[in-house]
Every structure is written in C-alpha cells, then in structure tokens.
Length: 239
Image (cartoon, rainbow, N blue to C red; front, side, top):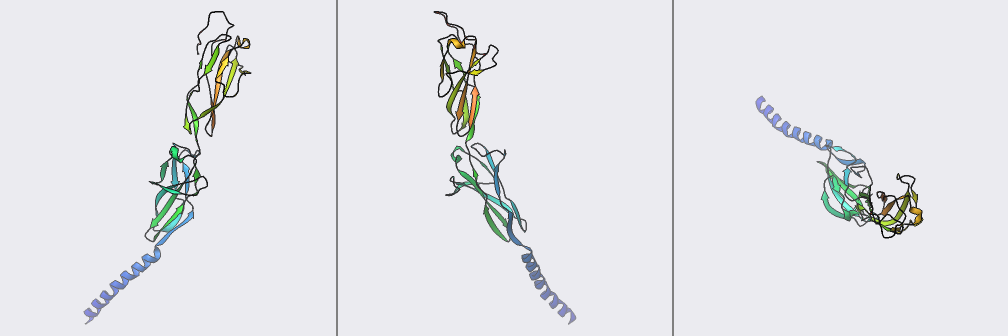
C-alpha cells in the first residue's frame, strides 16, 4: 500500500513540476524592448554618397532571451516620405548612383522567443559624390605672343558628373612662383590669347568643377612666353 501511494504521488508530482518549470520559463521570458534607437552611418564616417557603404547599428535592446536582429533597407524621398523597400537586407548597404538625393533608413527587427519588435532608424541623406581629379588639366598651343592657349578640363570622377564652371589663367615667374591671375581670366573661358604682358612669364590654368561639391585642378606650366618672331613659332613644352 505504501509503495502504491509513493508511486501515485510521484506520478502526480512530475506533471506539476513540469508545469511549474514551464510557468517559470514563461515568466522569465520577455519581449524585446528598445532603449536606444537604431542608427545608420557610413563605414568611413563621412557624409553618405554613391559608392560608400552604410552600416546599421541595432541600437540598445532589453529582453530575455537576448534578442537577435534582422535588417531591411528603405529608400525615401528628400523629406523622408514615400519610403519603398529596396529589397536589400543585412546590416550593410552599398550606395548606388540611383540613391543620390534620397534618404536611406534601416528597419531593424529584434526577435526572441517572447516576440518580435520592429523599429525604423533615423534617415540619412545621400549627398553627391565629390569630384576627384584623376588627370590634371593640360594646356595646348604655342608659347609666343599672339598664340592661343587651350585648356582641357582634366579627368574627373564623382556623381553627378562634375561640370566645369570657371577657368583661371595664371602668369607665373620663370621659376613657376608668384603666380598672378591674368585679366583675361574668369568664367567659362577655356582659351587664352598670349599678349606682350605675358612675355617672360610661364602660364598655367586652374579648372574649377562642381557637382554639389566644389573642386579644382591646375595644369603644368608652359615654357617661358617669348616675344613674337615673324614666321616662327615655338612648340609648347610641359615640365
């Protein structure tokens, strides 16, 4: 009889213990709660622009068990409205030219056994990719008074495509120092006609470009400008 009672007690106790454990586990689990919102920034720490990579930080969360995170990237208009899913996931996003002048933000979802909670990061605005000079401007033409010098724009990268908005022609001394802007400088003037005032000087040109960011590049110097000799012209030599 005693054995039967013990056996019955054990049979009744085990389910009750399991229920208690499950209830305790349920009480211990808690859904994710955000205490510091998600953020988005470039890996470089610079202003976002095409070609750079954004990385999403989930922010700070509480919850038990500790939540895991997933990410979805959204592109919005300039005002942060009309957001559409880019179809890209993961905590990084490489900016394309098509992202220019838009806002990018990340939807972060925190998940654990007690639930899922989603929160959108603050948006970041995608600026232009600043002009970068690959090859400097070049001057072509003669080196005598009356000759016409022509400046190339140089080779640039950046998005949108950098556009030239100004040229400055410089008169420098024979050593290439003490450069002064020539009176013919300024504006979209890619040519320059040598005058008697240029004799004894060397010429260089600075090209200014803009695509939302400004940059400039300067050519090499010409040879020393000479007075005209009828029927004879010197070829331009670059240093």
